[in-house]
Image (cartoon, rainbow, N blue to C red):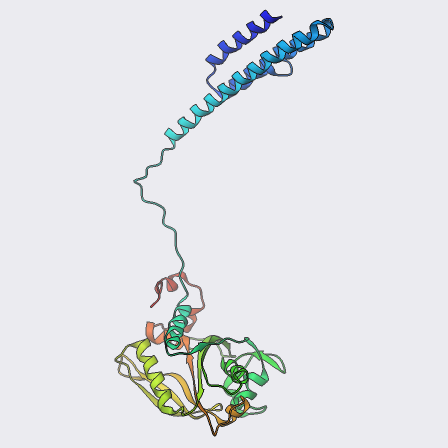
Length: 333
């Protein structure tokens, strides 16, 4: 039996030297170690042996079986390595070829403008405040000197959710909330965010747009402070050569109120924002004594500034997600 096993081992070694692919190797392994292979056939002969011979022969068969398994494993590793080397040669990478460029996104133009404006006002010591876009009628109108039935409410045709809640028509409710939270202390804030009005969408109007409103409350605050702040901002945003003018206007929450025009590159005055001194009634409702403190407020339309600075001819371009439009402003200020 031992001689027979050694012959099997020797024959297998010779066969393995000739094998050149994994498929043939699997077939050869089945011939020696499979269920119907030579080792399995020898194991079947154990039943014909005596009880004394069975352990010795069984041990010999197992030893040869282990040697065969090791030989097949070594051959498999060698053939797999050859396959890997062939693949590496056939799929070689030319490192001198240019790489694939991936498109990298950037902040939306509106976000760039808002961040730019925030950076300016933070530099002046302002805080950034935020508030809910679904507001109560109380904060959106009544706290801003626009009681129920006030005719000026028609200036802000609104999206009402129910009789007491609506999509905010300006970011002024954030100012009202901040006033109540401040406990009569000085305030210096801007409030950026989305606002909503029932406008018909066209080149210059949108039912949704961005605002940045500012509010300063303290002692000895005057129109001179307001004009100086707005002039500094306009010259920062459009360039040092720009000038502004203030025209009398009307807003329920400021008195006196002004429209602010900027002198354009074309030599014309263009309205860019509204502003004024905080109305005494608004100060009272916010917990301030108008005899002791004053304040000014302003409201900036982000899209309007973007249209003027970047010569955009249609406000709808901001919201159509046209990548060709957005790519023009990649990189920011």
